[in-house]
Length: 470
Image 1 (cartoon, rainbow, N blue to C red):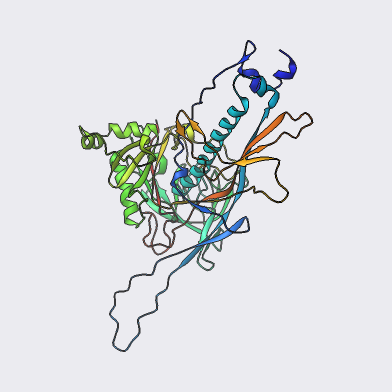
Image 2: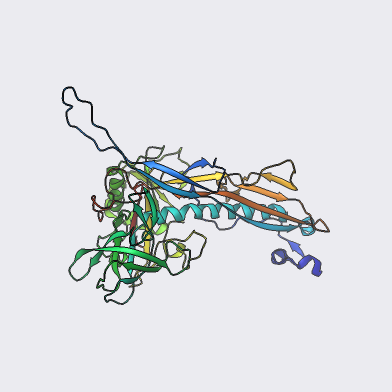
């Protein structure tokens, strides 16, 4: 076998006694469900960054209007947030000489595999913002107990910004713009009030991973004390407890009552349902097994099967429809196997923690309401007067018979431009952003930790359920 034909390690791996496989097999592949939870919008701004605005509500006023008087003037708050789009993509290259000698087309296989990569990458990009918003404002102080103002925490997610009442924007935490918070005191079994005035990540540029918080005053803590911002998202914890994931033990399996509690929270906050008329709950296969072992769930579904929603695109992944919520099995839901162990600068880091201090694995189910996330997208590459060298198109990829959602993703097939015209480069491209918009100023506080006078949940359209993750 000549060196010319075996320099491509991918081709060498496929060759058996001088022949390529005549039929490629589809790979093991995760379910791609998180991206479908986003409302999709076309990016129309002629810039990479834009400001979006959401209004609060006017407080109801039921007072009678006195004779000869005009009604009182109503006012409402307005909050703003930034959206910044970025281009993402990946390229593979195919040697047309090898492709012409193979019994099965390497180019076709490369395009298929690249499409799968695009789908999985986009699903991850959608997953991270949902979880980070749902886990917003929750951390553990992981240094040995003691006094002082500097506290190293397991996650800084929710502590790097505070709502500035003057600018009506979320701005960097500072002495002048602190994050009000509470720490669960494991000695007095009560919440102590603290104020965070600075936040420094362990990895520069990371906004959700480990880091150091500076408090306005010295505070005596015990290792793994739970610190919660007053703008924290609402979390249901299987088995209860105020100590964060430290409260999770091997008996704290997910139960139907946990999902019901999450749905009740969304309803109480006036969060609308999706177009199908339901909230959506995403459970890992581990969580689904726990749910099916729950006595209440088994009693409700004994001998009745489950309510089928055949028009729903998730039909094959539906576990049950109950309490106004469709429960999906999603093997990309956060459990230790799907939680990254490192943090980088790409903005796609996950705030979930895989284990508590007792090495108990933690699982995270999500209950989601309508328009929790917004996907902004714009074609990154267009056809100009200069023309293109190759083709730009759309994807149509299936894996084991399941269609992969690649809407809004460009496929670029660049013609060979090397000296021998033998190398084709295939790429996928996405220009856009995935954003979870804030509802800080909407009615009601959201988090039970929040004081309505001084703070309320920033993200109200998602609820996390923390449970035993194995």
